[in-house]
Length: 128
Image 1 (cartoon, rainbow, N blue to C red):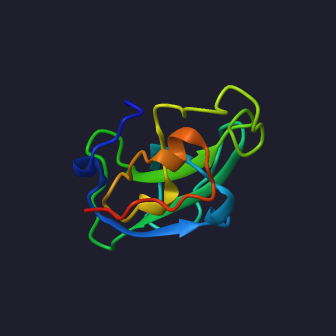
Image 2: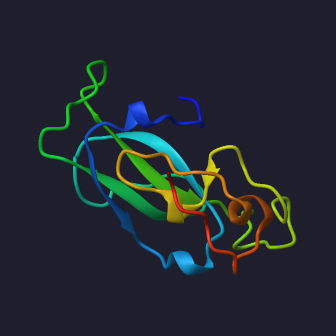
């Protein structure tokens, strides 16, 4: 799956659950994972750490090919800006990274000056 998600891929999302305080995070990576449940914390098997996930509404449908549910996970890798502020993403961000303050159920989130330049004191613009 492409790392660049579209709102149309996020049907059935009911809630975004954050496991960490967003105040210190300029960006999070997001991925659409196939899991066996609609709710609860999904298994996480990437490097780095899980910082959030979505839950699905009771009527959310399974993927017809796999029989699994598609749910977003939000994560950070060891070389991301929060853990390595002088590293590769001191300025800029990975393609799948968005400002977590712009994420809503059914909305992919947006790249903002904060997510791209790393100024944690900036406030993200409101979504239209």
